[in-house]
Length: 64
Image (tube, rainbow, N blue to C red; front, side, top):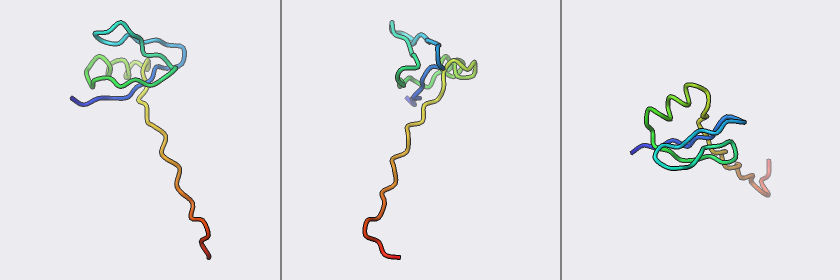
């Protein structure tokens, strides 16, 4: 099943499906890609989390 990594909008706590846990703005959570989470994203309560891209390595000692 496809999953989404989401985080709650600042100041909002969103209940997770099937477990007694909340999605908060403290840390992203991986959730199944189901209509419930898509609807919470459309409402603005959840945001799609995109992990930061790794920093590009600089070339040491390169001569121009």
